[in-house]
Length: 112
Length: 114
Image (cartoon, each protein chain N blue to C red):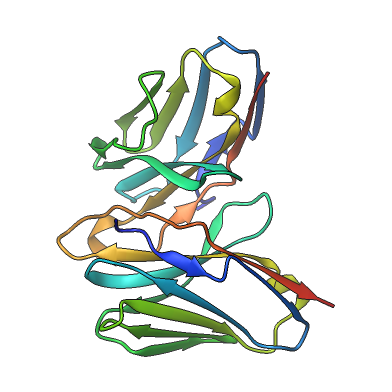
């Protein structure tokens, strides 16, 4: 299966704390993308990390990729109540497939 | 660009009726995806198009579902006849296939079949 599997399924933290979400996948990839979904809205792209990259930063987001373990993590530092959302990873497979498949996501709740 | 535009935003219909969901992708994008999201099954990929051609429809649940993309700026997802278990939020997304980069999602259509 091409989809990633996010872990944990749910995460509840206090504002100001860091939140770490993990993604595991099974196939070789070109890149891996992380998306956020606020309740009742469409997914929004957060960050993309290519298979030859190990770490990438964007604002309060830090993504790591370990292709040997077929895993990625998303760290949100100094979380805010507005970060409350579901987070999804999407591995994009080698071989020209443009299929974009998502797992169940991690539901993050940041309590004020 | 206004982003991916889906219509209607909400649809309530009676069991057995035909339902048509519409999507306008971002201009210049050549990949289009249809997804269905429910609490039980999560976000399922139903079908995706590349250059208006259906590439993979393995996620379409059954023959009651059909999708078309007559041109680069318009796609439809049709359910005929609709059933209560089709109730879900349906999302359309588009991307530029050659760059293998981000997909842009519409706001979704919340379908309720009673």
